[in-house]
Length: 236
Image (cartoon, rainbow, N blue to C red; front, side, top):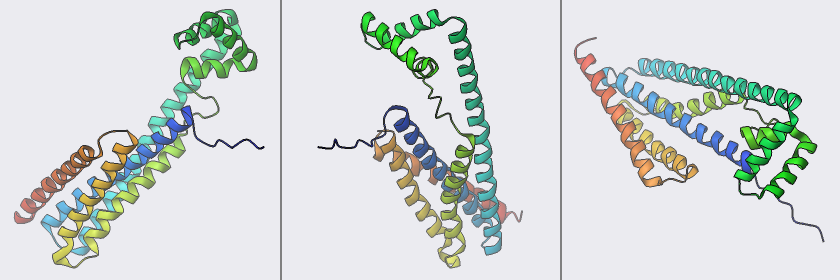
């Protein structure tokens, strides 16, 4: 009989996947809120379609590029830190292998193993791949799966863009009298979805997260619309 295949993601792979999904959801959420707030604010001052489209596109491009650049810089710093930590560990393994073996044994003991079992496991792990063993147990790093700044940048760029497209299209496609209502309602509905999704990924209460998300988005649109209306009335 053939043994059943087991394709589930475990440990770091699962955590990494959840982190990417959560980042994508939050990026889309930022795209919705920032772009909806921008176009609703402009709509408070003018109903000119070209002005709304220009403002929405500018907000989409500026926001997506800013998100991508921020993620690239942040993840590049994290990757540099991971590489530096691995370099230190590699040097310590070369210069003081016995001390590193003792350290690995103690770390495994801290995870609930007896000294004998921890020692045997540490010896076997060291013989197989000492650097990988210390990276995973001591540093929490998988040397084969270091964070990739380009992946993070593209993921942020795309997720923000997808989120921003909804309010942008909602403000320019409907007839003039329907634009504001369609934009607000569709944006709030999308915020319910992103709030629910982020809560499910984080094992939190989806109702509370969705309500919090909607409240924040509604506040942002309300403030920018009031500001746009005041500026429009003042002829600015």
